[in-house]
Image 1 (spheres, rainbow, N blue to C red):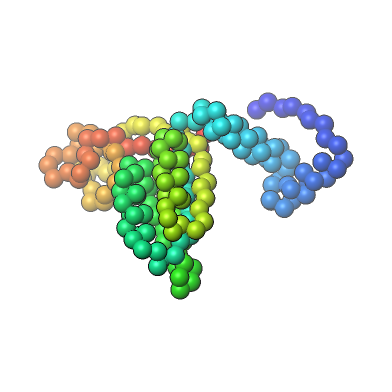
Image 2: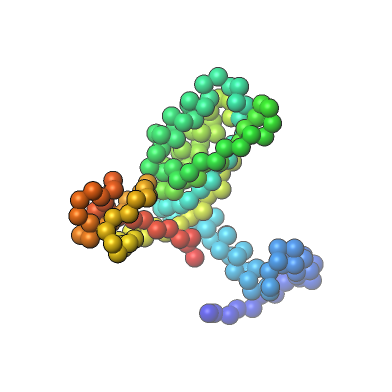
Length: 180
């Protein structure tokens, strides 16, 4: 780990220490690492260096809006290769909130979020996007042949399976981790 020293004015140092305390950091170094990572990732996204991401798109809408639910579902199916999961909650008698979790190329994730939040009837929408590296590799999930759960993503089960494999057998499994 490299060390470096920074100089801060008294007021900025006091405000930084307040931030550290409020956010629960153990020391200035931990806080500074997080701040630097955040700014580096924001810059990567601005200059489009990040190729893949995970994202949460949350939006509020009136469930009375004509055909909105059908349009949103059609849009999610259009971007099925990006969609990880959705969560739906009822806020009150008229309004609902949904969160759509996406994983894939940054430009396609943004396109999906933009189209979704632009739908007529969506009142408020926002996206939290986190750049990630996607590593593709294969590994077995069980030693005794096939298994009964559906992954919903690519997966390599190799030559260990003989007959009656799940859909997607022989393909690759993707793992993601935040960029550091």
